[in-house]
Image 1 (cartoon, rainbow, N blue to C red):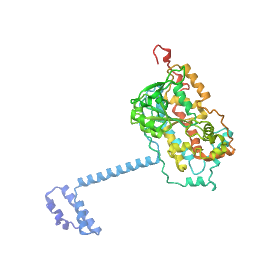
Image 2: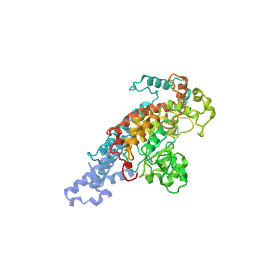
Image 3: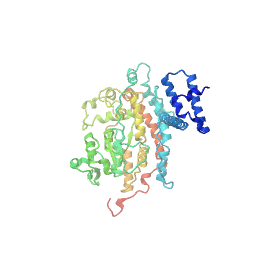
Image 4: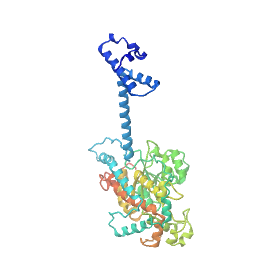
Amino acid sequence: MNLSKWNSSPLVASSSSCEHNDDQAINKKIKLAFTMEVVSSDTNINDEGLAFTRSISLMTPSRLRIRQLFIVVLLVLVSAVGYQLAVIGSSSIELVPLPPSNPNNDEDVHMRYKYENKYKWKSQMQDQQDDMIGDEIMTPSAHDDNAKSEQRESLELNQFQDDGTNERWQDHDQQENVFIDSRSLDGYKDAWELLEDTDLPVFWHIPKAGGSMIKDILGACHRFCMATSSGIDDGHGEDTEIARVKIPRRPGQDPTPFVNVDTTTIEGLQRAKKLGLAQSGLADAMVTQYYYDANDLFDFNHKGRLFTLFRHPIERSVSMFTYLQYADWEPTYNPDLAKMTIEEFAQSPFVENNWITRRLTNTLNGPINKKHVEVAMDLVRRKFIVGLLDRLEESMERFEKFFGWKYTIMPTNQEICRENLLKSGANSNRKKMTKLEPDSEAYRLLASQNEYDIRLYKYIERLFDEQENFVRLITDGYRLEDATCCKCSKNPC
């Protein structure tokens, strides 16, 4: 290699007296010259490119090492970020730190169990949800030993198999791009999150699904201070400050405590927000049909906890029909309903269409499809502690365990009150409800109006079993453990 031409180059003129330097300096110059010779002899570049290459080649080794180190660090960071994005994209499980717990405290052990099993439970339920919203219609549960139940499920779901004749089913499922108004509902905690004293239990009241009974058990038996529609009785709707008030209910009974708001109407929820219901801590539980609007009651430090009782869609439809035939106090009452048969009702404008799915997705009007069922399933999985009217005693026990509800007034009488309501119900239909056979025409017609609710209900049945993990470490009869009796003491309740 010819080094003389590089010695005469202006770029290295300042180093032409390298014979006065030590051996290390000479070696550096030779390395630089070698680099430029290789570039000039092996690469066909223009003068501008050569000048750039020479300037790079003349960089000191220390600067080169710094640049190389910077590139290595940058590549490592990019790889790490890419890996994290890949993990997040492939999993719906969010990691949160476990709270500190005391292994000697049963309640702490129970709450820690809920956290530790959160990830496995979410993954299992997501898999089940995916199984039930595929292109093929879901089949009856393999674990259902009741032959009649299997027959009912088969008949009701076979109505909607896509054999090319069910045009409505095809039209709905072909709507791939559909806007579903499901707000974040960040005012409510996820079902598996730690329960705190500042959380407010919110019961979503589904009509004709046992909601009135749950409401009465909480208010009349547990003697909770409730936020419902009754809080504005006796003129308390005009109160300018939030407070607990006692409303007389029945002669001979102590007045029932309520918060002076109405959470069963949109206007009432707006007033409750203005008065600071969630922040006041006055309500032991709240009841509403409008849980989307109630979301605005809560803030970062005061969250809602949703729970509800579900009923099989066909049974709920029949109960609604029976109720509307005589409920002349309802705004929707129509005397023509009293003259209708159940078959006529199922084909009339009065019949509800997938009421649960529509409310869960906030899609009250217009067509819905299986995308709405996906949203509804995910919402119930994330936000609700679910109960089933078919498993009423177990459901009430589940609610009491989860929220830590115990008797505090007079346990013996409170337990009698609870038992009576569970047996007889509340707001039960005066007229005996017709029981439909799964192979009847009326059953088929109602099933066609509730096709998505039926899918959703089967998923909720599985979810109910899975949520047993939340309370499995708590013994049955929790409401009676260490219960207190304020009426047994000299101090008033």
